[in-house]
Image (cartoon, rainbow, N blue to C red):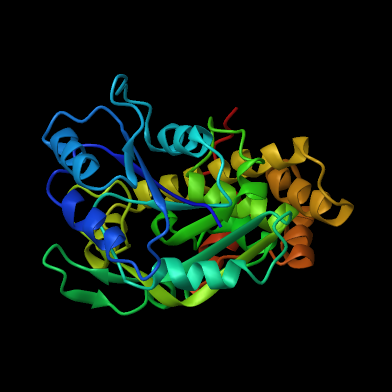
Length: 311
């Protein structure tokens, strides 16, 4: 089985070497690491060059053209570099646990190769010094891991750094504009056309630090939002409307009748009168993973409190 690991870097000099070393220390050693640098201005490119020179499994794919594409387009570019049976996504500042590749590959072998498949794992949340903040990011933040389309429409529990997709799923990824994140969109594709599988073990140490692009929701982050309720409601609505926009791309694809009905109901729910919005929420079970967030989500959808229509 050909295994490509995809790593997009951007000013990651502080932790990049540790991450690459953790990939080198995997129990599975037959892999190729493709690195695309997204326009770093620190010593990231020097670190990449050093690893390329000492390990022929590591390849810097854009040494001559390091334009800044942004994280989504950068990873999409990496997927397109060359065909593999499976593709693993890697962030630049975490540490993979030694059996991460092995466990995901064992799970992938249970499914036919022509079925679009995403396999993902839990994460152990740590601080900058690798002290454990949470043994399970899934349990602490989401309560449970999503594996169904109706769940992923409204909330993503897949983190790219612990995710693997097969080639059948990679071929479906043609959209890079107006998606919230590549891991969320790929999870939508997997639940729409194939299988989204969760392995209930941590695959990495998920490092929290000041420069995270996206990080775990900590109590300090939540408290700051609660102090500014107008900002909190604005963020809720932004997430709802952007997740609708992201899901709408599925309607241009050959969905089954029942999934098309579900996606359409979610995408158009704010165009419906009050009682119809209530009926849609109940009929399809649209909700968040945790009770409090479901309460906020449901209340906002029904009341349209602070809702502003966007194009």
